Image (cartoon, rainbow, N blue to C red; front, top):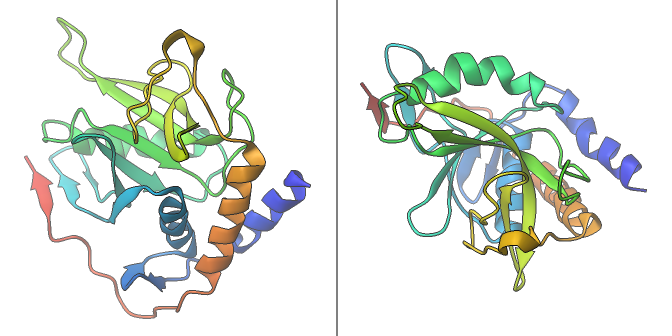
Length: 220
């Protein structure tokens, strides 16, 4: 049953971080390794720890950068959380502030936890995590962060994701259905890939050395 599978998925994430090597890249945890493998299964292009964002307010080294359609960039943070609340303080005090006045300040941020989820609130499709859209409204000096559930998108045998409630355009393929809503894959189809990604991640070599942070730093 899906509920039992989900519990099995989370079992190995309760132990301390285990560094792994996948595709000759050193990952800081099994969970991050699993997400990288999962991205590959979905056909998404990604970079691990692409850069550091440092300013007078905060510093943040995103775990991934996903390359979407065109030149779209989605910054990704992975934590073994099961709810949005787990990310709240970190986003407000670290991720959000580190983006201020950098070239990435209007890039979206994708928050990924320790599992995938069966349903979003609106479209009832499987949920990837939480997507933060960043805007500056007219006459407003501060950037407004709008948090949405990220729903999986599926069309023409290609996987992607979109905001569940506002911007329905797929961030990976640029597909858009308009008033018809979002096309999403069956949950069991996504769950099977997620479980397989976990098995593959746990089979990757363990790395015991130090992993340096990205030398590419954006600061203001």
